Amino acid sequence: MTALRSTVLAVDDEPSILQWLTRSLTAHDYSVLTADNTSSAREILTRERVDAVILDARLVHESGLQILEFVRSIKTLAELPVIVLTRALQLTEEEENMIVQNRAYVFYKPQALAVIAVTLDRLLRRSSERRG
Image (spheres, rainbow, N blue to C red):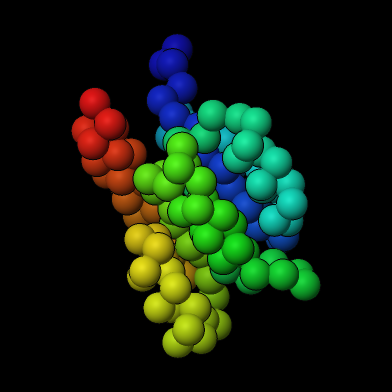
């Protein structure tokens, strides 16, 4: 049995997306924590060791991009790799600029998880090299 490599926080208000991410990332040897709103995500980020975040840009009644801003504002989290999931044509120009300025990557639902997993592996490897 392979040891889990890294812990990923998945933030999405659609249970089916969270289940899909959990199943898929677990199959790629990631440990997965889930949150369905920004409050839960912030709580997890402050109490758990998280190596990367995958978040939905739009949550019911709130912006998932608040999590991106939160991550970048905390010194111990600021370098975490962040992947933003969204539906095509859903982002405003302001949101796109904010994502770029905060060094996150965008994938459009439904994106093949293989591409997300490869990107996540590369981002975590790069993050580990900067720390070590």
